[in-house]
Image (cartoon, rainbow, N blue to C red; front, side):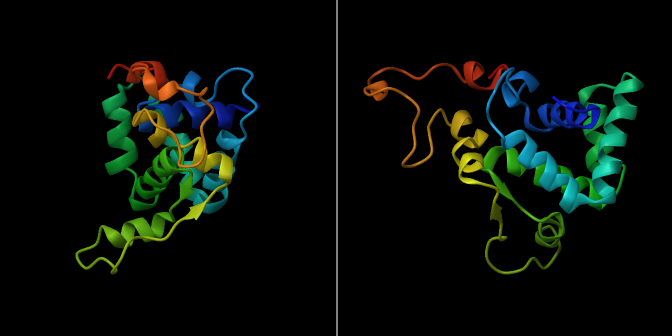
Length: 165
């Protein structure tokens, strides 16, 4: 990880998603997905992105628990920070970016009709989305498994996420 901000972002993302940081960004990984999510969140989040990383860094420095950090992110620092965190979670899981303002509109008493729109970050982000690993599956039309993999039970969920199931 190149920067302190990126390191904080990955550790915050691990807390938000429940997936260990070393699984989100494995050592020597050629994947550009973490950088894509970081850059998109930074560009789309603006001041809320800076606040989000600051809230996380301050909470860690104070030795707060994961639950306390989550409370700070989702309910103590305003809607912009809360919905940016939700967008980041969706980006890791789905490989798509959901505008935080749109997500906020869907949480209103009169949400817009239909599903919220999103932008796929890249083909790699889609195929490497964590929803596939959590489902112990792979994206349609894409698999890096060997022929016949479907004839064996899948690895445990902990093998995929690095967290207890």
